Image (cartoon, rainbow, N blue to C red; front, side, top):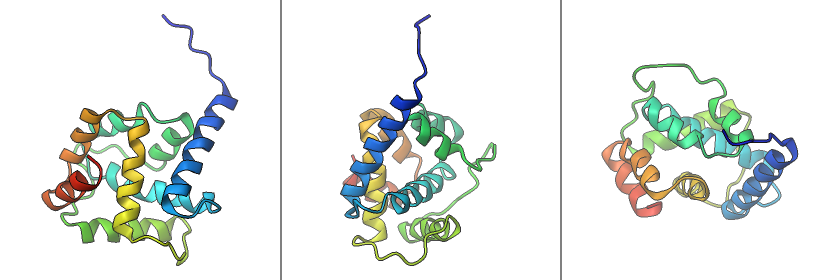
Length: 152
């Protein structure tokens, strides 16, 4: 068994680098807290639409701190609790979670569709291509097609 040393500073540094990069990609490098709200909103919207096994595939390679954010308020369910079908439905869910998590009409310079695709695309630094294809493959047809163009 490998000697895996847990190092809080390393976990914090990985998370810090990731959120800085994502904030830059989203066009608001100074708004780290809002970027975390976006990340959580998008990822919880995805998490609650895909099967449990795929969620574990997403979560496994994430920085430790993001694993915690991903599972926050997660409830076990045999069937994914959300069943949105369109990109509009997905956007509405993300916006609802943004509001729930404390985002108050922040003027993002990008559309919600762009925010979703940038956030999901940012996972490529941790998730290999075929895993990403499996996750996107769990989505409804319209969303799968949209993300297939923007992420894969």
